[in-house]
Image (cartoon, rainbow, N blue to C red; front, side):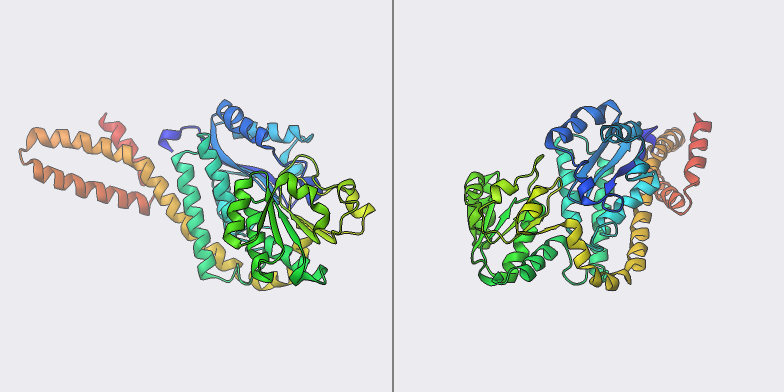
Amino acid sequence: MVQFTGYNWYAFGITHKHAAAQERQNFALSETQLEAYFREIFPQNECAGFIINTCNRTSFFLFGKHPENIEKKFVQESGHIDISEIGDRYIGKQAITYLFEVMAGLDSQILGDFEIVGQMKTAFDKSKTYGTALGIIEKVVNQAIYSSRRIKNETGLSGGTSSTSYAAVQFLKSTLPNFSCAKILVFGMGQIGKRTLDNLVAEKGNKNIFVANRSFSKSQKQAALHCVQALRWDEALNQIGQFDAIVSAVSAPQPVFTAEILANANTKCIVDLSIPFSVGENVQKELDIELANVDQLSIAISEQMEQRKKWVPRAYEIIREELDKFKEWELAVDAVPIIKELQRQLHEEWSSKHTDIEKIERISAKIEARLFERIRKNPKELKELQKQLNGRS
């Protein structure tokens, strides 16, 4: 683009496609690491963008001059040499297309899982707080959100209720013989924790459901919304042995639940929705507790995916339509300064020869509309227009 000379779209990251949950947790970024990227690494490389850091992916969506340096740093910190060893890279138009695919749930571990939309919004909003979200990035994100909304409304790609949070509740239901009256703790009130709570209350009612979060106010808010009980973080850990099941959706660098903590607990099953894992490896080895992580939950609901796959071609049609709209917008943005400058020069010439200013303004407006239409139909017209402008200078 004219005002972003040397800038390029760039996306890379680690997802469920190339790395199992056990490996993905090694790439998850802490809040301190995220802040370092936004405050230091992005500006150093003249890049704007955002990072989505969830249980299924750690992905960078960038627009800037040296995004490859950011990728190199991320990869080297993980002990690898190239992103192709562990993940994916998309450059230019492919990066924009990839963003649309991710937002539509086409790249989700569970096909059509629209939980990703909320996660992407959260990731983008975080980048705005650090000042790394340019207007052009916000435009492409909003266009991708609109595209995903169309896909959700116009196709069956998200048909049924298959999502990670839904699968978590179904696992509890099939594992706990006394599910309807079981005492269940949902630990962590981020996006996935809240959605799991929604599904859990819808499935079993609000009896014997407890929520906990590092921020007690978040626990209280969700407890009030669902008429369940809120616990403080330490309080929940002290009472951990009383729960029949635990759904863990917390972000922590080290396991929160270990065999030592759960040694005398009545807990029968745990769903670990965290990356890095919040349940220690020794839990399943040493204790009689059923454990499921995000990868295992995805396998459990694969049957319904066959129906969703039938809608993939139509989803891509919608994405192409919305990508075309974004490209038209980009062209318009590119064309504005050129057309305005050409208008200014013509206006000066006409004003020196004619006195009817109102007529000049009408003609100028018509020329502007026709030029935009020409460029929309044929993008190459923009270069021709630039040549004309240079020839007049």
